[in-house]
Length: 275
Image 1 (cartoon, rainbow, N blue to C red):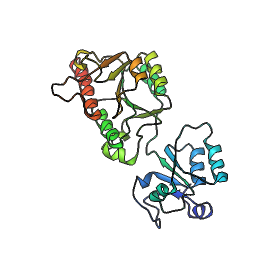
Image 2: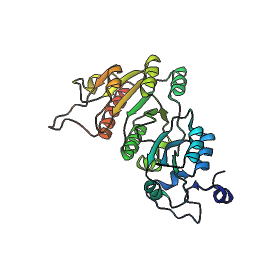
Image 3: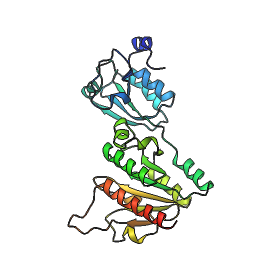
């Protein structure tokens, strides 16, 4: 509904898709995932299109921004105010000071999935990514999670890499097969899981308890943390257990993707050995 020629001419903006002929594009950052223009972005918001983030030009015309601000009331989109030069690098078309990045997948609701699994008598495993910001790390972790039998991935809506074309490519398509859930408050979602009978497991080097010594049976949520500073203090504090990966070398920490693969393998090994 957004990419009709007459709509673009009258209103400005549009989808920057590969199949739109006549568009001059600068393929810098997932151009197939962007929409641009005030009216187009507002319509996307009204129609509940999955949006990862919205870039807004600093100093944008107040009247134009007021329309967008009204549409954003009650929404929790990630907003970034950026120089016009950044927007111009993403498209040479009439963006009107607003570009939004859409998601190629539909995010799921973790509470609904939790209730469904437990009503079916399942013992699911949820991988929780606390502020993983590198999109390729995210894609690689998703691929590992799918291979290790993880039932869903939970990410915060802000301060985290979200599902993009680049992430899907890095995941070798795994992000199309494993549910990804987005939450505005990660702590609240984890509390809900905990109250529903999930054990909350933090993977961190800040403990001497080895993952090998822990039994991963039952509904489990495994948290891995930021590339820079690991799992946030609040999430560590509410965890039922903190586990580390046994190491023998002089380097005291692992890449988050490697650590994720190792702890998920240990869980899978235990589950398979019990069958």
